[in-house]
Length: 152
Image (cartoon, rainbow, N blue to C red; front, side, top):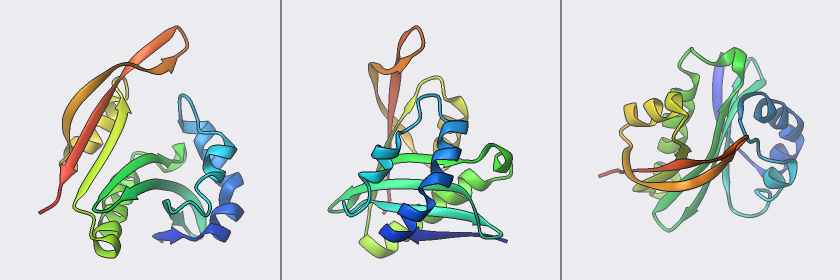
């Protein structure tokens, strides 16, 4: 059974090793442990996705007033391709709309991450602009795509 829940600071600290394992497995330029640690006690909303009580994904949001920014979303490689990313995205957004009255979501994604861009587009996100040379890559830099969705 798959469940998604808001992680409190103590849970976030406890799950940090599992999150780092997923992060290092699936991200081109993974967050560091200290980046996740900065979320503890700082007002971020971190959602964990669990399959049979094992962490298989997470989504990290920052928010101000009625806007939330998706800072990071990752699903373990073995759990990809089964709709888990879509479920995590939609359920976490719904939770933020209900809890915090969020009406606009923002994100940025590497222009080369077509899988993620397609996921975001299918969830209703639209491209706002391109940030030139925003992300580091092995041989230079690549553009970032800024996307958003407004909820009526």
